[in-house]
Image (tube, rainbow, N blue to C red; front, side, top):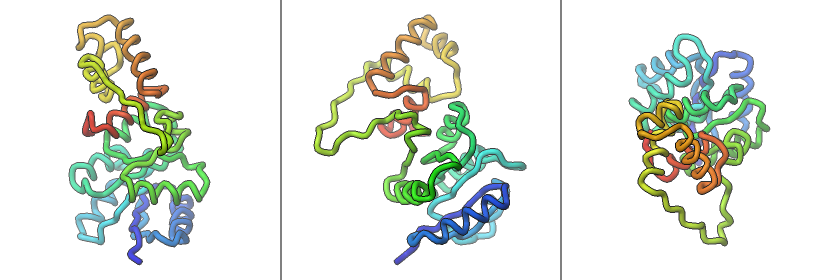
Length: 214
């Protein structure tokens, strides 16, 4: 059986080595390298080493952080899937990793079985988000039930695309020539229509439905 190849990028030596041992014990996975930052990752590829299927990426690292390294992979090795693994749970940090091209986001306190499941899902489907990170953003649909169709108006689509950028809502209001109150109404309406609870949920929906390509 061909194993799924992983590279771990994390500057905490004890954690990364423990993670290496854990993943190596998973039947379907093989760890190619353990690297300390994004710069080491770039050097790994410049030396024409074996290409991984998935990169497990920390965020706060010296020299070249996880957001920068993920963005480099998106531009230079787009076929490689990045799964963020971090202690950071702030919405802004998660959004930065999603915009950089991460296919999933995990917190470091997850159970080992969840990590194994996440790696399999990212390899198989291309995406994985835990319920905690997504904040129950994209509720699963019963496969036996036909999903409800969601129709977005042109202005809702315009707002959704702008919400996937770094711009604050007030700036989005200026661009759309609307008041901040009206933008708040658009946001709450989309939260309800898409069954999400935060801006991260809007971004995840837009990515999954290919409304935006990050």
